Image (cartoon, rainbow, N blue to C red; front, side, top):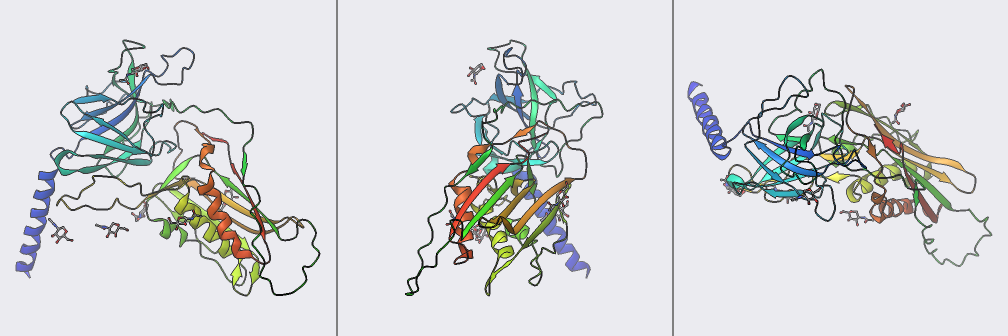
Length: 395
Ligand SMILES: *[C@@H]1O[C@H](CO)[C@@H](O)[C@H](O)[C@H]1NC(C)=O
Ligand SMILES: *[C@@H]1O[C@H](CO)[C@@H](O)[C@H](O)[C@H]1NC(C)=O
Ligand SMILES: *[C@@H]1O[C@H](CO)[C@@H](O)[C@H](O)[C@H]1NC(C)=O
Ligand SMILES: *[C@@H]1O[C@H](CO)[C@@H](O)[C@H](O)[C@H]1NC(C)=O
Ligand SMILES: *[C@@H]1O[C@H](CO)[C@@H](O)[C@H](O)[C@H]1NC(C)=O
Ligand SMILES: *[C@@H]1O[C@H](CO)[C@@H](O)[C@H](O)[C@H]1NC(C)=O
């Protein structure tokens, strides 16, 4: 008995030793900052520069608007191709000591939630969690072009913690985002009706049809604000349990990290082996696998485990906080299926407003839905999909 325990103890100590050797600064923080916010008179909400600040271990002051100690290192992160750097595509910068950091961020994440990861090449590669944590002053800006006294504000804080840094009581919901986008003239995006699937020629005369016979219309609505589902996409889809006799979802609310997701769906039977409810669940699954609205475990290059072997990123999915699909028969305007989920938060959430990024309504969004809707053939042979952000802006 005690011998076994002893062996386990040695193994645990060896593992601990290995990981502390691999990570010289266990308590390090990488802060992704927006600097000079307010310094452009015409665009007071824009930042004038962005930078990464590195700290061995930051000590946040109790007063929300007091500065912490100066960073141990800092580097500017330029606007590459005119893009705000704190986005899923990733931004890379080299610190003065040659450590290279890359941050992958979902910028619509509300404050207090995990917004992405940061990886470094130092010591063979490591990964930090990044938390949305906007609006605390952190340091002077390196870039003094617009204002010699420009201040950097926190946008995202990356560290090894399992939760975001606490928010002091006197911290307002001041925001420092710079992804200003203007609302387009229309908020509806749609595909042209898909070409009808060719009918199998079985010699039967084609029946006379009213213009909309066989036309299926699907309307999608997506929230512009994101949540981080702390598990795999398959595990989320598996929550859409439904009853084959009623066609309705029987899913219980799903717990995430700091939020609860409510699920609902319903649909008619199409024929002996297809059901609208299942088709809508498949459509959500495929959209989640293909569309940039659902950012699947971003590939984080150069990520290594402590022992030098490559590991896969821990499973998490950035997804809209609410989503719905409604399928309507165009000939009689009857709804034939419905699927939705939405999110309620444990606490009051704050942060900048998220506005709709309409470029995500692209073929990677529409094509998977059309492909899955073809499962309703021959009852339906023409499919049109329309998508819209709802709400347009979430604050
Ligand atoms: C410094 O700020 C100015 C003004 O915003 C900008 O044009 C310039 O590219 C910045 N420098 C770097 C290295 O990002
Ligand atoms: C996700 O978070 C919830 C709530 O904090 C927790 O109960 C659950 O175990 C987490 N799931 C995973 C796979 O970490
Ligand atoms: C979403 O939220 C509304 C209330 O805001 C609620 O009526 C509805 O049932 C919720 N659930 C789903 C799955 O849409
Ligand atoms: C790395 O992975 C290989 C194959 O899975 C394994 O044999 C090896 O022991 C691993 N290396 C370490 C240091 O764990
Ligand atoms: C990483 O994911 C790939 C593809 O899913 C899989 O083949 C591979 O075994 C995974 N590697 C590890 C270390 O889990
Ligand atoms: C969606 O993604 C899956 C897996 O990546 C792929 O096999 C499929 O062809 C994609 N579907 C569409 C319609 O692009």
